Amino acid sequence: MSRHNVRHVVGLAITVAVCLALSNTVRAQELLSNNSFETGDFSGWTLSGNLGFSGIGGGPHTGTYAAIFGPVGSPGYISQTVATTPGSIYDISWWLFSDGFTPNEFQVSAGGSVLIDHSNLPASLYTKMTTSFTAEAASTEVKFGFRDDPGFFRFDDASFRLSESLPLPATATPEFGSVISLGALLAASSIGMVIRRWRRPISK
Image (cartoon, rainbow, N blue to C red; front, top):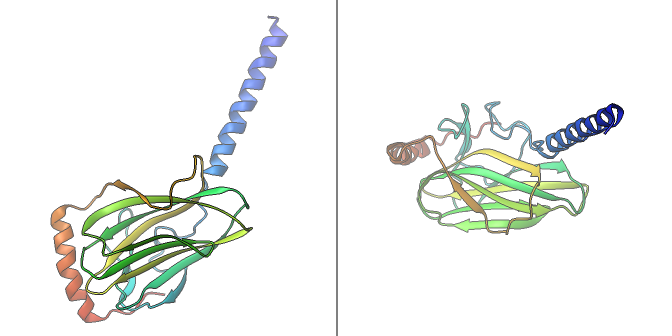
């Protein structure tokens, strides 16, 4: 192969590598704003439903803050509407901490369709769960719902990204991991019962 051809092939390879890198960067872009609540409030999110005993506090999966939800009797919701490409698949993920008190309910919706609806979740450390969604419009509302009558959920590091894999089933796939020990889980459950008595208003 001539020197000219070698330079041409090398140049082409570099161009392809750069294009792939840029493509991966675009595909990996996080579409939710303030997805880990590090502003210390619900900036970027729309709040609806029963917002009692809900707010921003400590005990995060990462960073400084996590969202805390304990609506009684009916769920409260947080949502964002993001730009999407019809026909494209998006991955939705989140980290959820459950104290195990019942009745409780956790729900995930996208584009008006309920993808996940779990009732009476057991106690667990922060657990990553993931599902996927095929967009049908140029914009999609992503919504998370919470109810925990006697206790609290902690919710952190939500994500909505263009998928790089085949669609996941509507039943969320968990990935276990935590920076909080079992002792902290039990302590958080006890503290949660005390905090509920204070009726702390929601952070806006």
